[in-house]
Image 1 (cartoon, each protein chain N blue to C red):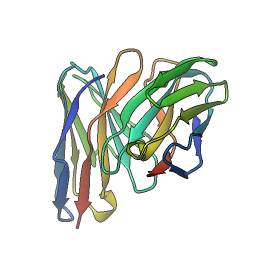
Image 2 (tube, rainbow over the protein chains, first blue to last red; image 1 turned 180 degrees about the horizontal axis):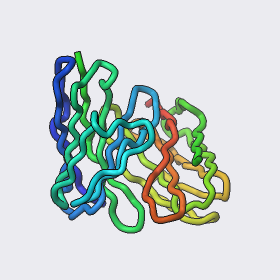
Image 3 (cartoon, helix red, strand yellow; image 1 turned 45 degrees about the horizontal axis):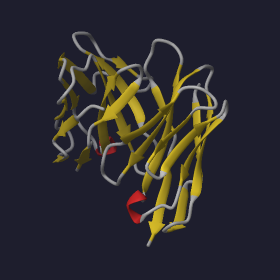
Length: 114
Length: 111
């Protein structure tokens, strides 16, 4: 497998502020990382695919100017939620792609926007 | 568009009572079908990848099988620590690694 960490695990912020979430691949150099969002009792929804050294690929309906993704190195990708609003409150999970097609997930970040 | 439907949505078992979870999928060409376990407030934990119809994989009390339309996750003599949500996901053939997830089956095993 692969060991993936996320920081912070929980964050509470005020509406209108920006929040940065880090995703680190601890034992593997990840060319590709993925960012997902999960609302209560719903499935994981892919937000974007992050490729090291290039621009992220966003899924339809995901605002790239609101969810800024930076994959600056083979071990770190960051997701910044800009001008967060209560409807952005969710569970954000990153994963790394390894091998043929498997993905290994981080522990997730619970974002609450007041 | 790829679709993944899991059933039942929730399942309650007595300890030792074996059962199966179902994952039905629609995909133009299957590259891989994945099973994950997710505990509350945590990220999914990888269990299995299945690539072609007829394939089976086992891990402790879990066994995953695959046909051209669905996959089953069989749980033999479950224990309370098997309680979790089990997620099924599919990846379409082609160069793109996008994975489509089902909503999951929430399993509760009662001592």
